[in-house]
Length: 194
Image 1 (cartoon, one colour):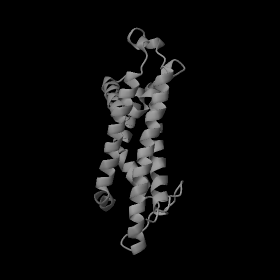
Image 2 (cartoon, rainbow, N blue to C red; image 1 turned 135 degrees about the horizontal axis):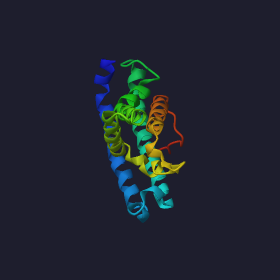
Image 3 (cartoon, rainbow, N blue to C red; image 1 turned 135 degrees about the vertical axis):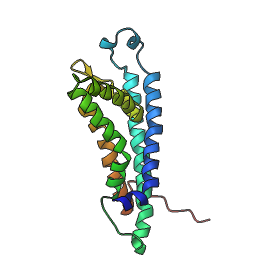
Image 4 (cartoon, helix red, strand yellow; image 1 turned 30 degrees about the horizontal axis):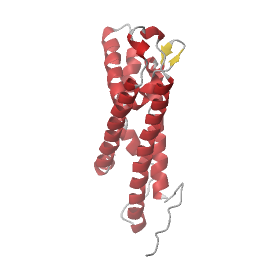
């Protein structure tokens, strides 16, 4: 496993940096389109329709970049696999996505401990601090996590922090596999002869 991390460390860090960049993008969109009523009564806050639309847009844009990056990586690796320079593994994309979302996993565990052990001051503070880090690292979901269900926003529910990792892991895994198999949704146009 250490060899895998060493071999793919550049791709893991690049995928994590995409996440941070799109997190700041999504966070800025959510803050720019937030409702004015949030400053007066937080308990009655409902996200605006524009905030929900920009939240969906930022998640879709993030997943598009992940799919594009992982497809390109799988396509590059397929040439190495065809030449016999590297062995084929169906789970390479999965491992890269899991390694890139390791910070998200740690944040989700800390938030879970903070919610489940909220009567212990240490864990309550740990959960609150982890929630802030989670909003900064997964800001592309802020527009959607502000939706209220049963009176509480989704970002206060501990399991949502685990669910936000699933789109990254699934899309990265499938895109890498599609890249190694040279699968295209749209067929590329043949070059025009001059």
